[in-house]
Length: 310
Image (cartoon, rainbow, N blue to C red; front, side):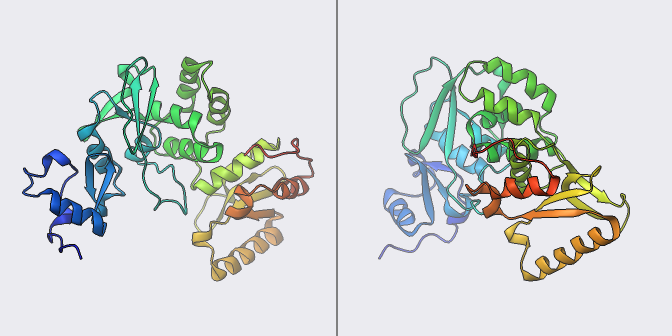
């Protein structure tokens, strides 16, 4: 049975194997800590206390201790450092991958536990965050728009725009710097559909299903009958025809909330003439085209696609 860990293990900083002596530790202690899961090797030779594994900056600092100095945290890791989780609801406890970007034509060795990419990287696309080199919010958004799955890419873009980290018009101009590269077509399309008023990832996913099917883009956050205390606010919809669609997140929609939502929507239909369609995660992210058919029935329009793109 491995020996008990020091009681202050949780306050240790990110550290490399070479730092053990300076911390007053040794390899035997490290082996026991890793065996019990109290310390995690995030990349080869770099460690963080398990309680800090969800801290993207701690993970990035650990990686920076052993990686070449020109490796810049990018993509999903950079998004998390900027405060936007690319893993999404229900996956936010999954392991945080280390992703690094190096300027094109650099020869960087493979490193266990790290995905390293080569691409043009102007100095203006790099910033220091807590002593770690990270792609700027703008560059991070451009990379996520190209390389994440469409629903998660739009969710990240919406959240970054909502937090004031990026501007849609600037991103539309800058994406042309990568013309001809993989994912640029997807990025152009998603950037056009950024909506800063979106309040949840599920709303981003649902809006993408709507526009992908060729339906008119819905307006976000609609007040019925008007913005005032006690008024209802809808996720998205088409005020001119009084039709709405809403995302019912599983984490917030137990039996009591479902009942309240049904009563609320019934009242909005009876008092103000609105009709609704609600959808949950399984319907929005699932492979079926049933959601497109239901939205089409609600709007009196036919979907323009026969097959889902994601």
